[in-house]
Image (cartoon, rainbow, N blue to C red; front, side):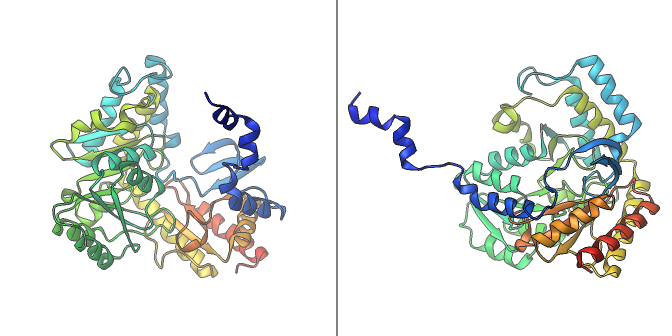
Length: 416
């Protein structure tokens, strides 16, 4: 080895170069320090000391209403769901210690995939360890180098990461703009593989995609369609299958992605499809093949929850009533909301800036209410939002209490 190479390997040489791999995060570090310097509690480090129910927890020693948990159908404390998890834990142990293609497929994994097939009335279901992995795995495997992915610019980070991992050409279009989507599709070379990726409900503003029109345009241009229904499964559509069901396009959608960490009430992700070749994905999808499978207790709780969601029409109706009441009440109080009318179980309250948003978040928490503080770059158009996620287990009186807390906090901070 030459003296020059040896010198290049010395720590002092690397240190002299001044390369700090954390320097790219300096703007975020400074923003956080500025925010905490005002004396506001860190909104991204909240600890729930005890969870009492789907709608209440003890935070900072105080009982708090939960309005930011994505627990849309309130299944986390369902007695049947909990009992199924306990039984699987006793019968099969704490974990599988293996991949689904090795020793990591237990009977429970097959059962939950069958529950998904029955719930969506589709031929194939594939379960991942998280919803993030479901998007990462399916998108990166289906669309590779030389293919094109046309997607809404407000798509979730996991969708973008799946695009990047698969090395396909990414073609974004303006949010929920049908005309812009079609313009992008017209520019794609003839013969290229095309995947259009949409979401049923977009998680920041809680708005719904015009799936009926968008799916029709995609099919006209020979594209396959993937719809992420993470925030609509369980309560939108007659059977809770999501916006695709509500729009009447289930038969035209090639892949539906979803998660267990919202309406299902546990953790995991999935994809359902009617494509006749779909089962080969189990051998070619790296995020599925090279990761440990979900623990038996988790798939048991998910399976039980999914079976019950198919019969949860009363809970869906109550959740919609909650959404309408909260949306209308906040609007009447003078808050600026992300949608003109309630479109989902997510209601976004738009803040003037991050400082005001953080102050409002803290005031709500001190008043006994937890919501999500969402900030750029995660939010569209660099907005700061207070994101409210309603639950089917919120009572009418809790919704009224939420409105009262919002009114008091909004006046104290100067938002209304």
